[in-house]
Amino acid sequence: MTIPRGTTQSPKYQRLAADLRRRIAEGEFTAQAALPVESELERQYGVARNTVRLAVDVLVNEGRLVRLQGKGTYLREHPVLDHRAYGPTPTASPREHRAAPRDCLAVPTAVYLGEAAEAGRELTVDFEMMIVRARVDIAERLGLRPGEAIVVRRQLRMLDREPYSIEESHYRAGLAAGTPLMEPDQIDGGDEAVLAALGRTEVGAVDHLVARMPGPEEAQWFQGGPGVPLVVQTRVTYDRRGPVRVIETRYSADRSRLVYGVGDLGARAQLPAPAAPVDPARADAP
Image 1 (tube, rainbow, N blue to C red):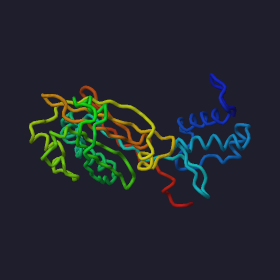
Image 2 (spheres, rainbow, N blue to C red):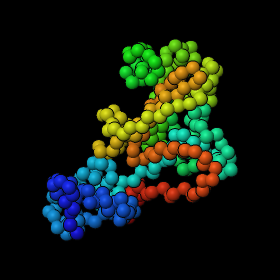
Image 3 (tube, one colour):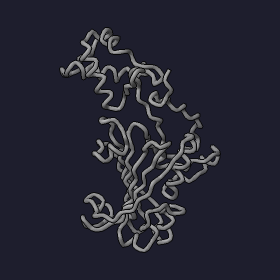
Image 4 (cartoon, rainbow, N blue to C red):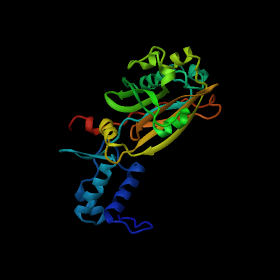
């Protein structure tokens, strides 16, 4: 087995890491079995032991592999949860699922709870409320001046005690003042119930999706590998009068997948959910 040269001459360990990524993507390795030991990879590729070690280090830093003392090196696979960023609210019945509203704006909390229940996982949420100065991008989307005071409601979501997402809803201070939005607690019916009572029912939204590396505090909270990026979904919601709020949600890219439905999905086949991958870091020692 040889290391592909590629279009440019890069260090040998990086080319070895690229070929190991290819083999992982093609399913040659599984989470249930250890990767070949360093001496075997050294023999397969005809390279020095240090080259193998550096290549494996790259994939460990990317969060693709994990070294387990006394066990070997395994694929690091977190259970991936599909989040319906825009589509039917999950229900127990496929018929109800197809007939459900095509819009998640009204019940996002129910969507997360339903998805966790479908996956057989436990969702817990910590709430915080802050009054901060609006960032330039948030102010622009809400039609404010940069630096104006806004109310931010933060939700820290955990799945089976593993960090899942950080969601921050940004409101104009004048809209939130004197309402339950100023409380650092979950609201019965969700924030949407408060908005509806204020005559600001959300009827549409625009999503912006980007990927970026986490900052130090985000990396500490998500507990991901140093090379694992975040998927950041920024949703601007609107009612008939204009923008209502900006919701910024950050997900760890190795354990979340955003799903968007487009068009009529009534005839979509109801496929069984894939089995959750086994994380060897949690498995009992052989």
